[in-house]
Length: 471
Image (cartoon, rainbow, N blue to C red; front, side):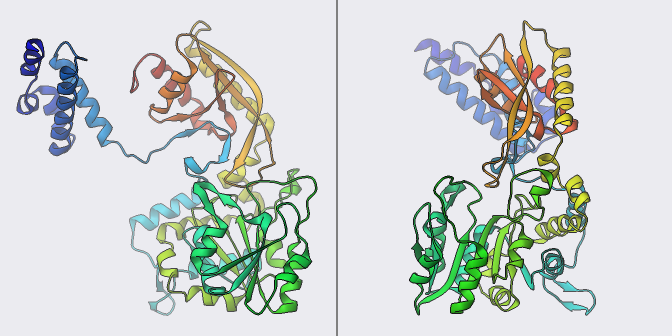
């Protein structure tokens, strides 16, 4: 107990540390409150370690280092850039789609200056924010009208609340999907005020199942595209065309939640079929909604398209204000959509599409460059480095059955576990996110950008030599 008291008395005070040269330098760079809070946090931690018998000495130099580290940690942005080496192109946990350069430039301009968000420049009076993208969306898809809310979950809710409140919505049991974060179609329908009427079975639903369920309380026939999973084998699903015909027969609204909206016919490029928004609109349905930040490659948004009479009703729903998008979403979305006027330009400039359609030969060369960069930094006694073939995923609840051939650079440290290496690179600046397989850290080059190929060897060099947090 006496030794603990001696150690506690040896702890420097807050004022004493504030007079140290290293802290005075910090004061010229960071807010005083941030530094004082960091000092107190470090001293409290040290005091607790002493009382618990976990610390047997007090060295001011180590306390100063801890304070500096704490200040740097607290001063960093919590939302930060990461390097995606997982091979999942539309990675929900890593921000989904990257924006095209044109979209980023538009965002910066709108952020830096005042803009005509809700001002009609031609008429010189208040306008509508939908005008910035509505005409463009209609041009690209053939829809009569369009609007945009903050995400597709909001779009689903708003469509149902506007067009089917207190009424029945018939949907196949096999389409009652759950997506990330335990978001479930039945729960959204219940919250919207619509009454769920499920028909068919998990794997087979027939047109007569829908027709038999129609009564005077029915307002809508709904289809949810199962974009995040596939059922194969003994399967039957009613086509959108047949559902539209049934809706017309009974004067019912037909709505599809398309999930991951797509403007490109993937089959033209040798990939599996994914329905395009243009095809869905061409079927004659009344309303469709989809995400802006998945296959479309834009910012987070819920895009609603369809017949003018229904879209205008949705716009007038008071709940729409709670779901409306801001100037940043509009800027990013408008610039992204404009690229789709030229499909080749879209495939080249929109990162999501570029990553999906990257030729295998280019991926191989990128893997070779990364491998060479790593081998320049490390000997085989430090790191085992190999190139392997593997598969990437589109991600984002889209094309679940599509395996994209790719190359990965696998690394295995000789002086620590691969779990520890993975932990350390997550604490790097910028964090490097890969995946562990076969006791190796896999770095999939499909989602690694060219400028990051040179950065990764430097990151791994720092963490293996104990320069990063947690070592």
